[in-house]
Structure formats: structure tokens, C-alpha cells
Length: 194
Image 1 (cartoon, rainbow, N blue to C red):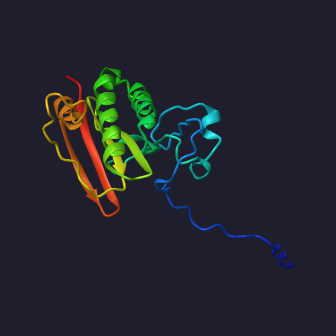
Image 2: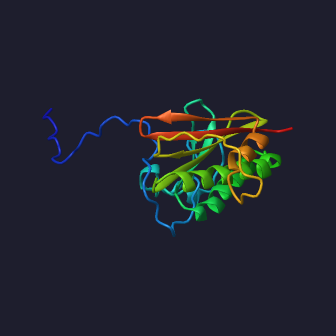
């Protein structure tokens, strides 16, 4: 029996590697948000699954397994005060999806203060905001930027109009901190149900 000729142009696809989070980049200001579930069992509309992670714009929030195995929502935003409402919207979306709506007010306050601090104290063009579900009663809010200067809580003058952001974070969060990275820092706070 004669051998079948090999068809020209048949390419062998390389093995698929898991997607990595997109790098911090300047987002397009008019891109609508899109949620994409990545293997953690959350039902999403078929229209949301039409695109892939590689063709999603970096400013669109996405649901991904965090390194700890916990689900997380992340969004890359411009490092401007106008990004605070988008950060709070991301937090509310995540908490609603996880049925943790009772944490929304505290978590949004923490996120807003951390975004404001990044905008006020760094020259980073973008920030990444993330919310990670740690368990059924706790979430971690984080803001990552490209500045290596770690935040420090300083006393504000009684008549000062600002300077109380970390005091508020400290009062509302169960705990908070900052992790230096070789390219910047990640400021995080844990919010728990009462």
C-alpha cells in the first residue's frame, strides 16, 4: 500500500503553557470591562468566553487563579485619581460574585485610599488593583505600582485636609502591609467580615 503524501504547510503547534498575567501597561481609557473565568468553576455568559486572555485588553478586569489558589479579580488602571471609582467598581464586582457584599463598604474605602496614595506618592503611569478571596470571610485588596518607596504611616496635622489615608486603612483593615518587588511594590490590606 503506497504511503500517503504529507501535506505541505502542516504545522505542529508548540505545547500550550498556562497564561501569565499581562504586564503593567498604559490602558485605553474607553475599553469596556469584560470578565473572563479561568478554570475556577464560575458560570459566565457565552459572549464573555468568546475572546481569549491573549486578545483581552490589559485594562479589562479578569478572574484568574491567584498563586495561592484563591480566585482574584485584577485590573490595570491609569495612576490618576480618576481611577478610584474603577477600582471600587472592581471590588464590588468581585465581592458580589463571591457573595461577600457585606465587605464592600470597607473594602472600597481601603481600595480608594490605596489608589489615592499610589497616585499622590508615585510617578508610576499605571497601577494594578486586585482583590483576592482568601476564604469565606476574608479578602485581600492590593495596589501594585512601579515605585520602590514603601508607604509609611505618618501623623497628620489636626487641621490638614489630607494625610490620613493609611490611618483609615489601618483602622478598617484587619492587617495591611507592603511587599517590595524588584520593579516596584505591592501594598495590600486584608478586610474581614465582622
